Image 1: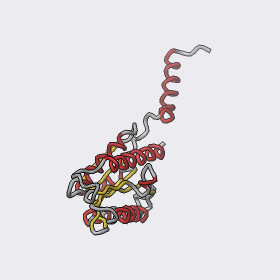
Image 2 (image 1 turned 135 degrees about the vertical axis):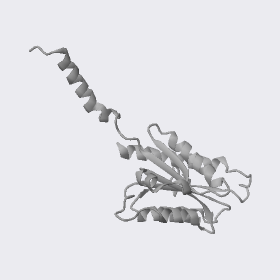
Image 3 (image 1 turned 120 degrees about the horizontal axis):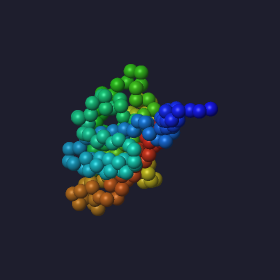
Length: 196
């Protein structure tokens, strides 16, 4: 049977086109949204480390914004949402709670999205874990799949102590930034895995 060169090209191009999804081409990039509130700059420093960790995963789109710049559309389009808050009297900052309360709930549009948390607090045992858990509880109400950090010491997410000895250097210490990077990387890896 004689076939034309055009037929060979058509068959080859068809095969390549149909193979693209299996080769990882043509698939949407997962989006990791990092939304934070920071008055002193410490939570923003942690957000930057979370962003660095997430960006270390090839093929992931990372969007880092202060909560007052995050649109509902960005929340809905994200595959993973990582929220950062300072500790306010062992509670989530009011601005962060307002942000979470603004998320659409009817029909649970955030169901099965990934969720994670990071916090900063002025002292040891001042409420970091409680605030992390409160953020994760809010995500669970939305039907989200919540994640902790890369290591045991970041089981509920990443946290930093910024105002009590020996952590009074005026900046977020590297040991806390390592946890934030690990959290960002883990969330991005899982977002990529779930998108396949």
